[in-house]
Amino acid sequence: MTTPDSVKYSNTPTATENVWGVGLKDAKRRSKYLAYCDVAQSVTGLILGLFLFCHMAFTSSVNFGKDLFANLIETSGGAFINGEEHLWMHVVFVGFIFVCVVIHALCALRRFPTSYRQCRDIKAHYRLLRHEDTTLWMVQLVTAFLLFLLVFPHLMSMLTNPGGFDPNLIGVHTYHNGLLYTFIFLVVTELHGMIGLYRLAVKWDIFAKNPERDIIDQRQGDRAGLRKTMLGVALLMIVMGSITIWTNYSIGAEQVANGQEAQRYELPADKAWFH
Image 1: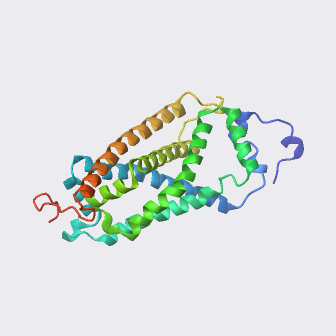
Image 2 (image 1 turned 45 degrees about the horizontal axis):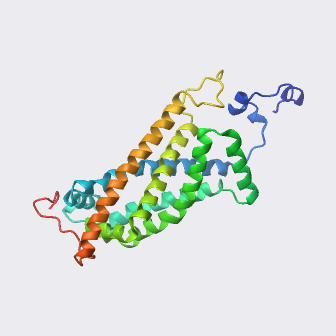
Image 3 (image 1 turned 120 degrees about the vertical axis):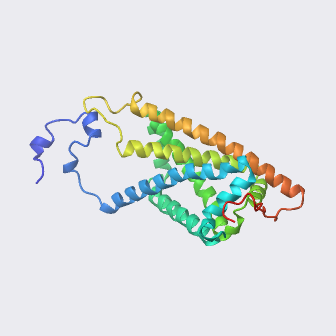
């Protein structure tokens, strides 16, 4: 049953009513698979966003010494099972992250502009609104494109060489990649991830909105606070990551200077957690 035209067109919805979805029951239904893609993109985005915090804690441990980092690497490799590191466990975990990235990327591609006209419309929309959330969306669009170029080589190198999980070898890898490349990768990743988590919070309606309030422009209140928190967390992650990059770079430079680029770190027996 649909609403009669005499009722449907008797009132012009306000901006607030449009945002709340008034009249959507009369809209033409689109394929349910688009909704499935949207959910898949959100779920994988949440997993990857939360993973960034775990990844930062894991890699930053090198700042407290190679022993701690090496023990965490062995722990992630299942050394707690029988005292031996199992490389296949690294492959399984990295493979899971790789699958999440692929699903997330494929689901997000449908939102990318595919023509000059669409790019022009996005630019005009951005200039017209001048809204913080629109700016963040533009940043996320650009970082998504850069991540498409950066993240797959990074993941493939770990999938094909799980033995490279080692304090010395990671340092050498960082040294050869260079500080600039690694820093750009860090900034792009953290901005995309933190903005993504913020947008998820907005998209899935964690805010207690008042329908009587103008919800088109929520520069104040809960959303503004979360936006500032998100940017603060992103900055903190970039600072922590920069310190870790420098530590790994220094380790790599030392290994290269000593002619020990392929030398793995030997964890002292009295420092090992599971030996």
